[in-house]
Image (cartoon, rainbow, N blue to C red; front, side):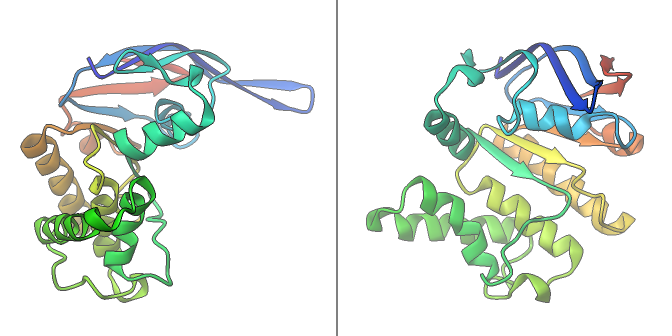
Length: 225
């Protein structure tokens, strides 16, 4: 088992009003599993994903990655865990416009370990990933020179540069047409199958979610299998 979520609650305050977005989420994910959470906009999917990835604190409950309660870690240790164990793919790419595709991809690896001895190996691995994603001819292009689908593929490659155990995907096809979206899901599925990378995908698209090994629906703050 790679991840456990136990009794996850998230409550926001708006003036005197409490908004209970997540109401006791429980599930386990095995290593290498492709897990999808489907729900409409505003259901709390992104909030849940951010909690699972250590980007947002739950109001109550526990998230354990490889039996470590991530919200009992120091900020430094949690940052290190996110950098080395988890790859994030967001709807809006978040590529840095002033850097080339290759430079964007190298950034998480250089943050993890920028020793000169490893830079060439990291670069070689980045080029290998770019080839797998069909971006070998876009290495020195800037993000504004890419299509939406190419930008999202570059974002996926960046998420994989540190060889994470888990890939967390937040509406990764939300800004893409159907053809580009199918290409992104095909790439994610390929990574899941070939590299045994655990994938957690949140989406509003039921047909997209059905490509996962397990599909859960987030309704009224709870998960329904």
